[in-house]
Length: 498
Image 1 (cartoon, helix red, strand yellow):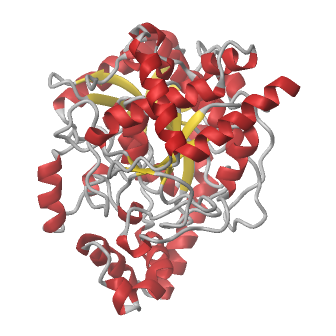
Image 2 (spheres, rainbow, N blue to C red; image 1 turned 180 degrees about the vertical axis):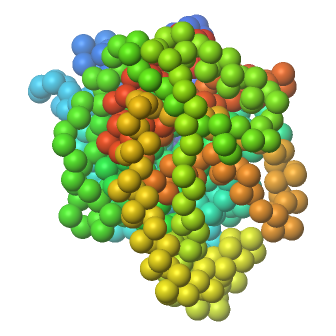
């Protein structure tokens, strides 16, 4: 490997400097009470302490690296940990503070990146043997924006191979496990991102969302996950699944932290074909806004059909709480749009040169390859018709919000499978469409949606609530999500992993 010194999931501690600082971090942790654990700080609080010089970016980075070494061998959320690079970033950012103020609220904040997001000089595999040696020359645009904002990158996070699934058991680097119960999957495809945030292995992480892949693992891992309006954040430099559906966004332990990260990602990118221009909006400023006059639309059909009973009970309880906080609720219907031909054809278009190579084709996981090859059968005429339907749907979905400000629905219709069951299902090529039924429509429409914790099952697994807004409606989504978060205690629950 030609990258800088790395810690990988195989337990290789490369670089004497990295080993020394991890040892120092462990020593510091041994005399620190749980309440003083730096990995428990919100981004908002860590940012305040860094800005006032109460906390060093190096100290915070060491704390996260030490926790990764201690915990991640059980969760398997990281593919690559860039310890030396992270510490060097932290030192540079700490030195900057002596010469002036922080670059942004993300100055010195350690984050993780899903491994389909390009990082210059650092292995980026999309969790596939096909890309096992792939080292990009340039950062993805979202990475550049976060780097400019002062974020520190701890490494690359495990995921479902090429983001084409919802369990994270189909990966070249071993299944990701749910920190709330290691026998279960974390959801996907950004399962490593959600698990790492949940287990406090990074302050926040980037994921991608094509059909569910930020919000589903956020729900299953008890964290918050946001996808904004399609095109609001550039996806250039991300290994694509379907550009017309793909979003990049944050997973974090609070709505406020998601808002801070998302604010740094927003901006038009002329080199990204799906990037859009938008009027500036203060996303973080929405946190704490009054929601008493909000009108909530409840999406019943099909979003509540065949729900797991515990998800149904938790959602009903959340809706009752939201009703007491707002102007009221009404039931609404979301018109269905079939974009499968767009999804399948775009996926195949990217992979066609790879699967045409016999050596590379043999490196795909069987389930991934079967799904990719399905896109080869989509006629160009059907692709064009489906894309037209999708564009018209996006242009007209605003009418749904004529009488409501936001929509609410369960994030998932069922609970996660065990890792063993998911492995067997992948071998049998069993469809996991039920995992994405409640999330895919909002990727098709390209409108903002967030998942926030709203309960726990009797078995102790988290449940997520989804709040959706109109195009460019990130502010009301964030406002209501934060108000609900503050009115409940779910966001403050932690997984039992040590």
